Length: 176
Image 1: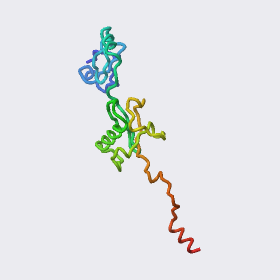
Image 2: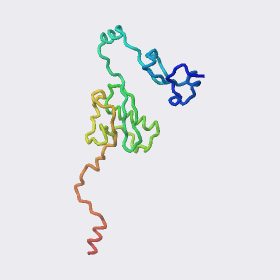
Image 3: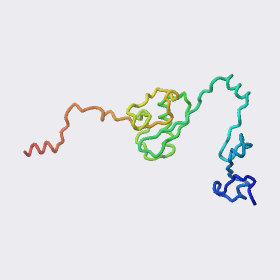
């Protein structure tokens, strides 16, 4: 039995022409099958053409505002980003908290030592030295990909007032 559509190819679908024509995943050339525009075909959805009335309705309502954002946050030493969908009205600190919650819920590795959002900071990339302000809104950041890492500890940043001496050097000085 042959396929009704000459553009269905067995090597694309992995099925025989009989299986491909009776159901399952179909791959069509949109140039030769323009009647498929606006219909749902497998995983591919081709939008229908806009009419004049659709364009007039969009102009009356004004420009559409983003309501939700898909954000990718990579945590240091982790494999792959955590995908977070959030409203554009939320702030950076809310994104950090949601990312930690998803990371723990998905049981990703390596495990986080601390789960307090105040102990983490968000950067545009792993190579960015300046962290983002925790009170910035997500819509004003201009990026959807971020890098999250632990804040540097305060003891590592503080310089000790006294010069610490190793006890072995005291012993060596005593023996000399």
